[in-house]
Image (cartoon, rainbow, N blue to C red; front, top):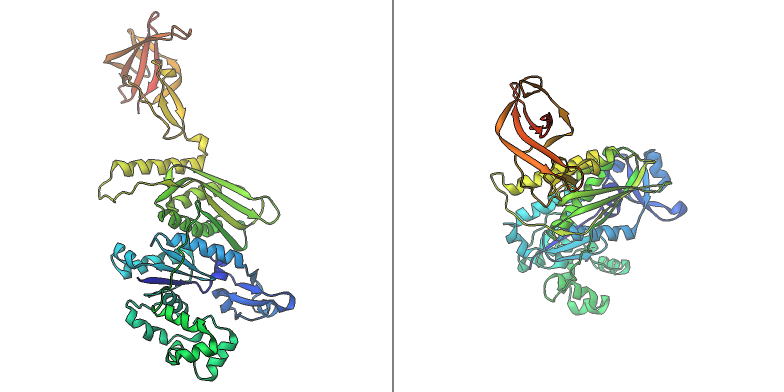
Length: 476
């Protein structure tokens, strides 16, 4: 087996600062005067703030410094969301709390053609999500975790190379108590290589069996089974903002992270959704809710972001937003298809659905309607509006225009021929309609396609009985 270790050294910070890393921002822990900076972003480091610094000292270096208290529960939730996203690369992902994942990728390397291509895909995806992750490959999950936590880029493919690769790692990768690390340091044991050279019996006697067992699992001498992560049924993403935001563009920047998570979450299940709910939480007002309903199931982050841009552009915010929450509706299976050099009917359908979604987001759902045929020969009653894509019948009528006037327009006649700013030339075919006697709204008409000298094409009829001419529709 081959495992990909994914270590997140800034996870506590990335709960908040994935949304915006331009302003000084730090995570603090402790109470009262003992509150200390435990993690700071790049903007804060450029201002001179470092881990372990008191909050008061940090504020003297950056007056616009934003602070958040460390949230262990939120870190766990974010790690689980990242695990759900990572399932698009492999079927086995295991959590290594508090800030790492391991992915079994031996089969995935063949699926993605090569190890390099797989790592490139994972790396690009993490960059889009806003995570600063360290990756490492190893034949055992524990070794992959240790190598990733020690630094990015290690690749150990064969088990025979494990001992030498792990030998250079410092003792801090082991979960040892401070007293145990101090005991080993006093005898000059500073790396895993040093530990491997110590007598096993002596290690067991002085530090207990745990250290030897852990080393054996890392080196592949004993099994190291992992519990596979099981994703939830629906996507639920939360992103706290480092500072309140009122501008739609800055909210979209933060939302983009969640939409990329959602895309990976659904890609792993080959699913999409037609319903999304965006909740914008404020400090003192009820949350602003933005619902997005789609014509077809989709998961494309770029398409969804363009729709939310339209919706947020016409959604008033009563107060600055402090946290955004994105929830998906029911997941729906999506049909796999190969990309085609030539435009196909399938891609045309998807483009139409994307256009309908875009129009609905800009104009409102009720402003965009589809047309369905009704079994009635009277043109005024032969159609009805339906939801886009909901039409399920096709009328068998003659040639009729899509643009029907609300009321027929009476035409003048010259030499017994209809006239509309010029003479109209009638096509030889006609459609006679005699219908509606049963409901009192009966009509008796002869319809013609009429051509105007200026190039227009119209749908006109002559009323049987009095012979009056009317314009009823216009062809495009």
